[in-house]
Length: 271
Ligand SMILES: [Zn+2]
Image (tube, helix red, strand yellow):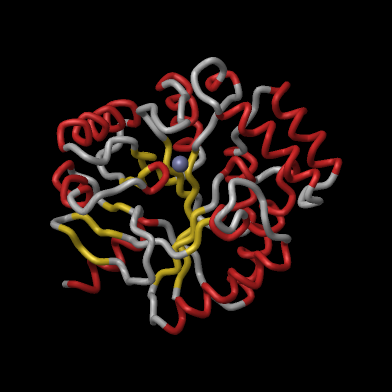
């Protein structure tokens, strides 16, 4: 089994949300609930205030640096449309697309359109124009999907999608490879709540169970989603969890590949 680690960019700045959605008030509520329930320390609480004033809600560079040191290929999904609490502009996205490409990160779309072909095609074309890339993939924001979503993504021209949550090996839909993912940071650490509801120890135990299940189900790729937003001392449990997962996988001699490398392996195997 190899591991594919990917990152969804849900936020870039704080300002992009002001007067547009309820993300900032929700963030404030969440940090108070987490402090009151002893899930975060005073230090994390203060750092969260500091992030607000710094207007910085992404940790892309920090995460690429960590990944590089640990020989984990960086693979990001960044949005070119707005929706469901995702509100950064194409200008801001482009700035980061250029930065990620200059650091050899793999890029795909964090998708918004999921229920009609026209919007899905438009989003694909917009990203292609902005990034200059010809081959790329997608993961839906909030993994929104309906049955027809996957064939529409395939028709649009995506090389791969990683929206389905399942313990299944990658499979083909037309020319597109679907890479079901098995582990999402928030699902482990929030565990069904809208705030951190477990401690690091519990998060590790849950993760070990999921990795065991991946082994039992004979998965060739363990697909993990970690949001760059949480690669921060303001979210210490999330940060520590990610560092631990990477260390753990390395200790198990599980190698890391990105989607493009996995697609090449799968295509070679099929021939
Ligand atoms: Zn998202």
